[in-house]
Length: 578
Ligand SMILES: Nc1ncnc2c1ncn2[C@@H]1O[C@H](COP(=O)(O)OP(=O)(O)OP(=O)(O)O)[C@@H](O)[C@H]1O
Image 1 (tube, helix red, strand yellow):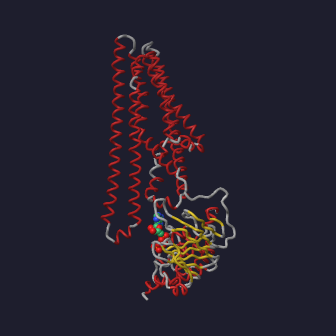
Image 2 (cartoon, rainbow, N blue to C red):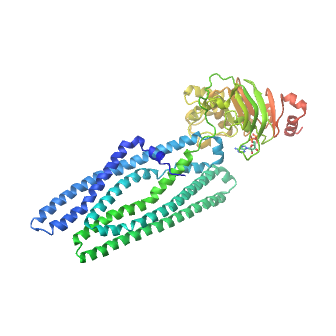
């Protein structure tokens, strides 16, 4: 991937004035620092070598000038350090927000493949050193370019041949830097991938901590974690090896430069082509030329880390959501809730088998339809095509006669309420969790929704009522309570279409009957698709559709299907052992 320069620099835009001020300060500070050795040269070569009776006054004058220069440098450096870092941190934060928003836009299929921990690592670790790159990158270039060019001009005016001798080493440094920067970039990318793996392992083990404990398998998790941790360590060891080669190579060349100056400089003094004061000045300025090299190479790990972070950031940003709005997508207003599948086929990926093939079904507005059939027949998949969590591979899914592909995604999903077996609640209060169904709702609306969902009474019995914290993923609530909160959320949303995917199957009989009551009241007046394994729960459905691996096997009411003695009758007999 080529480095996307244009995009990289676009993040400076909101802070460009402040950043230019930082660079201007850097320029001034670097230019001022160049004057110091010249003043030393002036003292040693002109003042101390001349009339010593007037020397002291002049030295004091230069001392005063030096103090003023130090003050300018310090004020400038304070501004550069403080505001420079701030600009970098703000840019990093902007990019982090942009990345998170982008991830929110990506579709189901992306999340099917990616591990959450790895994605977390991309948002946190990957961007961590970008702020350093963003402000130190240009800042150091200005700083060291000024010092380098200034030192070169001054040294050249003192002794051209010695300066050229020093420069002979620079191509060597260039080649070394190029070679190791490439190596380092590769090593740092690997580090980022491996820390992502460590994060993924932590996320996986900690999310499943209750399962881990129930099987007493802590040791297995520790082993899995250590495996990833050592892989990360291994990768870091390789990075340090590359760094050690590189830094020591650079140090050796720098020492060779200094030795060259001392030897050739001394020879020039012997040959009377150089004065001692000039050699001292030369040695002082050599550090101005060498320091940029030292700093830029030592900084290069940090800068490289920023660069690889940016490259990985761009990889993620260049992923497009597979399901997105068409231009001029339709906004829905009044929705009746009629759903139609026309010759719909679907497979999750090109290399996988079709889950649904040529399936056609029409559900009337307000109808209560149950989807039953063997596990893996595609019932959940069928339902997830309606809100376009996945796109039909061929055929059409229509809502009120409009292809769902033509409808604005948000507008479409606002019409559909989903209650699943696995309820996901966010850490926060009961109130906040119900409000998730309609963020603009007031407290009274929320209480009404909770009452409809048979949740009000148990909520009032919680220590802080609606303001009780429910713990991460709602761990402080029972399964039935969580389910009723999720139903209240959908009541509040009040969508014309409802999908109930095994909503009661994880509950015991008592909870089930309360939740069932809430669901029945939720379904009133809405087009409802119910997926159920326990056939007893859908006996009253207006229509039962039996889905098998070969498509829709049969459909009808409970009584007519039982009488037909087909798949449904067999499933029913199996469940009730008739
Ligand atoms: N994200 C996915 N990626 C790839 N294959 C998937 C994915 N989700 C489901 N499948 C596969 O698609 C098929 C249908 O799954 P689906 O969950 O729709 O069946 P189901 O009828 O709802 O099953 P169950 O009654 O057990 O919930 C299964 O073979 C399953 O392995």
